[in-house]
Image (cartoon, rainbow, N blue to C red):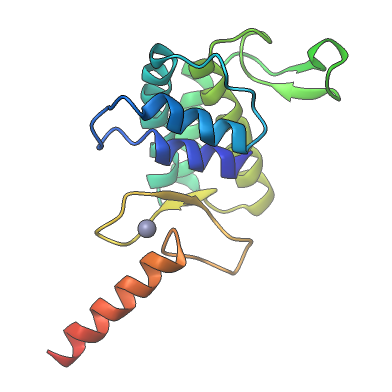
Length: 171
Ligand SMILES: [Zn+2]
C-alpha cells in the first residue's frame, strides 16, 4: 500500500502540466495495484492531484519526527476515524480511514496512503519514504528496510548522479 501511495504521488505530480492522458495514466497505476479504476474521471484525478500535494510532504519531511508531524496533521485534518470494513463480504476485514466504502477517489487515496505511511513509520521507526536526491527528478519512493538507506528513486537516477559526480571530479 505504501508503494501504491508513492506510485500515485509520482503519476499525479503537479509540477507537470495536466493533460488529456492523465486519467488513463492514473487509472493504469490503480489497475496495476489491483484497484478497479474503470469509472475514474478527470474530476477524480483533479481531486487526487490535491491529495498528492499533501502526501508529498510526508516523503519530503526528511526526519522521522518531521514525517510523524506531517502525518499527524493529515490524520487530524483530512481523514476520518479508523473503522473496519469487509466491503460487504467481498474482502477480508481490514482498517480504513476514509468516511465509508463509497468514498470518492481523492478521499480514498489520501486516507489509504496515510494509513500505509503511518504503519510503515511505526514499524520501521524511520521516515516511511523520501524524495529522490537527484536534482533532475522529483519522484518519491518508499524507504528500504532499516539500515538500507536509499537516496535515489531508481537505479537510473543513482547511475546518472554517479556519472555526473565522476565527471565533476575529473573536471
Ligand atoms: Zn529519481
